[in-house]
Length: 286
Image (tube, rainbow, N blue to C red; front, top):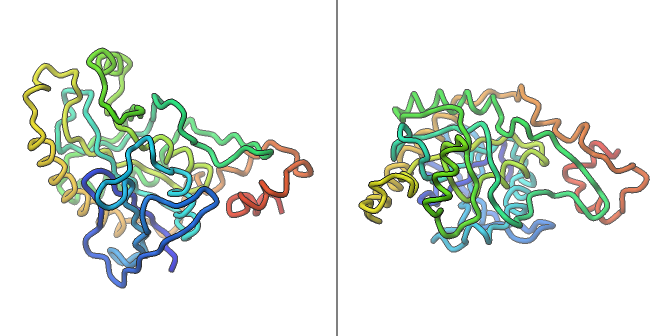
């Protein structure tokens, strides 16, 4: 089975409601195994591939995620667009728990996570100034409105290493730098999706205010779990509505991100690298 749209579910979202003719597919990639079997089927009238980022049962820590395998598996299935859902902390007073944010920028605070498919003799430098697909942004903004979900379009997602949360000092620095939300997963996905020429968008779902807020210590685990559950329900509605609204053709530059990014002389590309990356480079290397 193949799919044109991919959905990555984050904390609290390990399955999608409404799948028809669903089939689980275990894939092996050049980078190893993805987080979980992909669930492929029809959702809101389109072929969709769903992946639980942390595995069902939430077994995989953010620092342990095999981002390359997760995105490569989507490419193997024929996915051209990815909607990625992520639980985040708010760094702004006006971004409340249960609000959604569609970030258009990322800021990297991770340490040593692989975030490229390239290397081993084949070098590429993709443009990443605008890391989020604008066409997907329009679609998802409209879908949130139709689903009755309070949403803000535009803002910066600060991607930290984890798995521990921020110190108060760190949280306040991120606020002074103008960050909007903080999470642990989406930067690497965005970079890899760009290299794979897949349109990518994060739907950041606020579960709490980060520890900068004076009332932080009175927030209970039960509160956060309640927000997670509510956000998961809202996400189901937003994703289904976004799929229904998805234009048939891509009118962005995501699908040609490698056109001017491959730097290595074609004659110098090692055969092993060419074979490993053939899925994304063959159309340019001939």
